[in-house]
Length: 130
Image 1 (tube, rainbow, N blue to C red):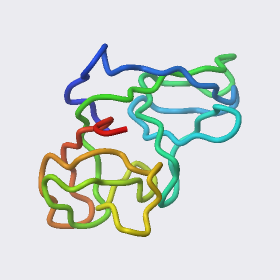
Image 2: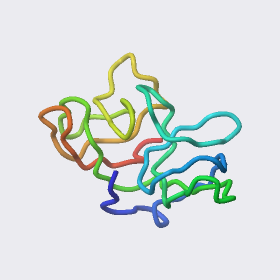
Image 3: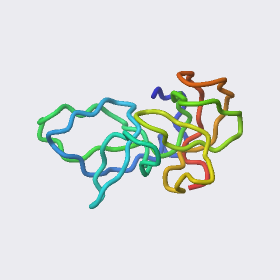
């Protein structure tokens, strides 16, 4: 995931707990677990929390990390998407068109471009309508 533009107050970052042992790259789509702990998205309908704002090195003693919750980001698609459609988490750093069966908390935002299929990168407005 690549940042195009941070909106609001510098992307409206929110700080969450992370496991010290985890390594997280800057620009990863993040999901939440209990209690208020984030990890990288890996599966369809993972609860979306935001985009990691910085890199986290494994076992560096750091136990919190900020995620951007409002901005425009280039994100990989797992299927065709039409501009204006809502998109949701569909796997590891991927989005797909929201389907009726998708969980509301997996909603990432609005597609700002059309994708003809998988492995195409499109701009997504993250944090629109949360």
